[in-house]
Image (cartoon, rainbow, N blue to C red; front, top):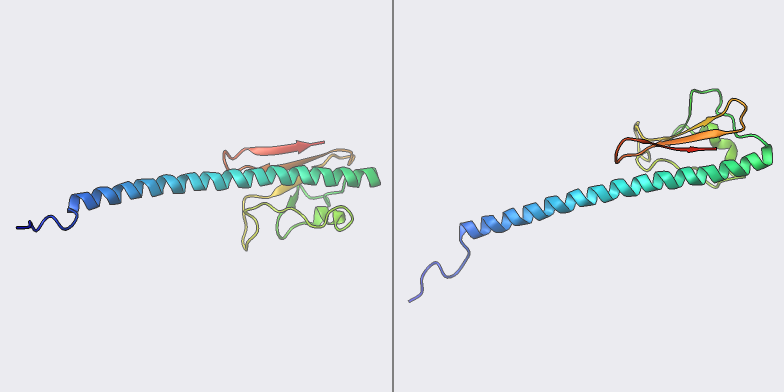
Length: 139
C-alpha cells in the first residue's frame, strides 16, 4: 500500500528551494550591476585618453588647444558639444559621450574640458560611478 505523501514535495522543501534560488538571483544581479558600473568607468577613462590624443593632434597643427567658448567648463554631453566641434571631422570622426548620457534627459555624468588661459594646456574630467570620484587627465 502506497502512502499519499510519496508522490511529491513537501511545502517546506519547496520553500527552501525558492529561498535558495532567490538568494542566488540576488547575488547574481548584484555582481552584474557591479560589472556594468566597472565597464562604464573603464569606458570613461578610455574616452578621456582618446580625447587627449585628439587634442594633441589639434595642438600639433594649430599650436594651441581649442577654446572652450568662454564657458565655465566645456561640457561634452549628447546635446552640448560646442567646445570641441572644431575637432570634427579633421581630428575625430565622432565625439565620445558618457555611457550614461546617451538618452533623453539630463544626467550628472559628462566629460568636461578646461583649457589653460593661454590655451597651451588643458584638463579633461569625468565622474566615475563606482566611487563618485573624478578621473582627471591633464596636459
